[in-house]
Amino acid sequence: MHDPIPGPDGRPRCHWCAASPDYFDYHDREWGFPVADDRRLFEKLCLEGFQSGLSWRTILTKRANFRRAFAGFDIGQVAAFTETDVERLLADAGIVRHRGKIESTINNARQALKLIAAEGSLAAYVWRHEAAPLPYAVRATSPESVAMSKDLKKRGWSFVGPTTAYAFMQAMGLVNDHHPDCAIHAEVEAARATFARP
View 1 (cartoon, rainbow, N blue to C red):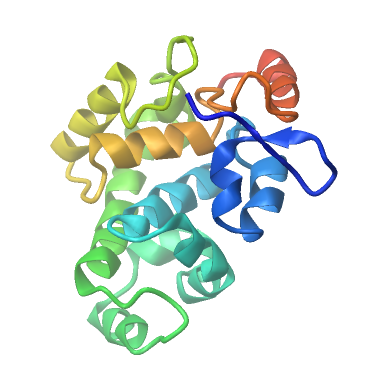
View 2 (tube, rainbow, N blue to C red):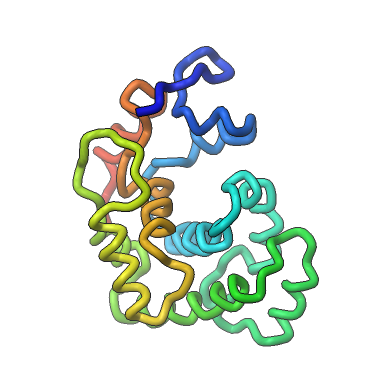
């Protein structure tokens, strides 16, 4: 178990914030707080896929560019992207220019539309995989992330391995993986306690 580190205000934060000053704001305002908005959930699944093999800082610093390039991660708009859009994105220095990941994002938008038609919303599907509370530990996967990854792949999604799925779950509040002594842990617990599951 990694001990927390002092944040800019002196209060303890999760140890991974030490990797970059950029992380503190993301950690304090976003990471672990529950999300039920389909666009935000889709964006995070896509960005976690783009992170594969890279650091989250690389993606976080380019997030505004990704949002611009991918129509604000509007699922319907991204699903309608064509080969012309792929070429446009491959020429966009503001994002990670990886053909496989770009094509995966477009494919996953198309699969997301099918999933929403079948399940009612992406949020309803995702929150069915909410992680059971576990003792705090640094882990890369969970039984729930393995199950969600397997099911998404069966539905035709790509770049959604168990580790990517677990990082998504951590970020979107399906599990509270803040260190128990982290100043934000209790805030996330309170948010999860009042969150209306879709």
